[in-house]
Image (cartoon, rainbow, N blue to C red; front, side, top):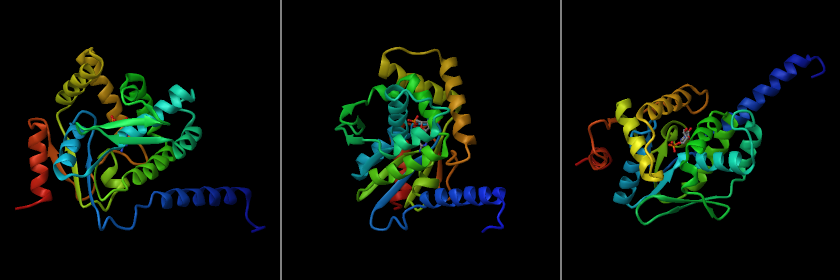
Amino acid sequence: MRSMTKRSLKARGSRLKATAFASSLQPPASSRGRLIITIDGPAGVGKSTVAKLLAQRLRLMYLDTGATYRALAFAASQRERLNPVTDAKQIAALGRRLPLRLLPLAEGGLQVLLDGEDITRQIRTEEVTEAAAQISQHPEVREAMVALQRRLANHHGVVVEGRDTGSVVFPKADHKFFLNADSDVRAKRRQRELKRLYGSRPPLKQVREQIHFRDGLDRTRRVGPLVKPAGAVAIDTTHRTAPQVVRAMLTHIRPT
Ligand code: DC
């Protein structure tokens, strides 16, 4: 030990840290005994609509992992006034003790409660959307969120949607789907969603740029990037309605 230089000790320390981080991201040993279905894909492919429908159809729990990043982004940027780009450590610490509850709504969506306060609408604003995209870049934040998502999915069966649910959160899921769609169609869907949420429709060019920016962050990050998970069934939703996508999924889940 005495012969170790400062540099080698430092290298050993960061190796240990990397190992600790990798092991904390290890998936649960098996999903046996409960049905886990993952749906991943970029923004605007219709993941949420499809995941809610599928969960209703199969009477499973619905878990929107994007909502966990959004809730943390809201808590960090609006409540704690942390910087989403530079305050990774503090945001991860906040994520580890986030008093978050997701309650199923009758129409299939989720009510998002932070320390008992309903923040369902606040987490969909443009500011929170951007902060969520930024905080989700930090490995230590992802580690905290993956642990939270696994705890929230503690149910006899679950449909989970996000960016890394089939690759990192539940790599042993029973069924994995990866959705994609033409970028113009995705931008139009997002524009319609914003109109539904806030009553105003931002210009398509602006929505397209925001989606392009988020796609870049999602696909290039070091930990938990957006990828088609091994063993996932790819479905292009460009010319399909949500019920058609669900029907296509059901043919894989319950082959006749
Ligand atoms: O799906 P969404 O737009 O609600 O996701 C919000 C942000 O969270 C988005 O910028 C990507 C990030 N996210 C992630 O990194 N991993 C997930 N599993 C889900 C969402």
